[in-house]
Amino acid sequence: MCGIAGIFLFNQDHSDILNSVKEMTSVLAHRGPDDNGYFFDERVALGHRRLSIIDLSKNARQPMFNEDESLALVFNGEIYNFKKLRNFLEKKGHLFKSVSDSEVILHLYEEYGVECTKYLEGMFAFSIFDLNKKTLYLARDRVGEKPLYYIKNSNGFYFSSEIKSFYKLNFFNKKISTEGIYAYFNNIQIPAPQTIFDDVKKLRPAH
Image (cartoon, rainbow, N blue to C red):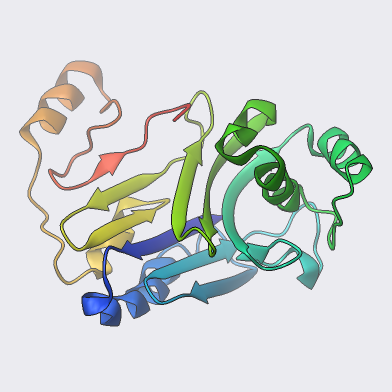
């Protein structure tokens, strides 16, 4: 289990909020006690808390980058078929610096773009920022085993593995969702995209 968090601003006028990603990520320390890492661009910030399992080396630290550092990844989960995918990608000329399953996602994205998830077998929630296209891509596994929450407002897009990261955003309104409450007391759960808060949504499984 790891923890991811990030901010994507629609303009630079509110760039001071990018530092909030450090606090958002610190809240996830229990998910990844082994290490932390951050990436900052003009309008984007990514944070990661790491639980080291497959590759314990520094080469597997996140945010992780591809060869030319045009893509930045933060990932929570496990890819079961990563060795098979790695062999396939190496034959296509992709170069790896680690033996982690995380890096396979980056190279699959290079090869297939947003269609990369079709090849992944496992449980995952991840985000890739494309520095050239200035786009942010998020994905969640098919059954929604790994959590991923987000807020979108007029200033930007904010995401995290856990809702309590959003408590660190000074604009966050803890208004309880009536739909969320209704769903919980009827189903003992709140199905995506709803959550217990009005402003917070849950990314649907396989989205």
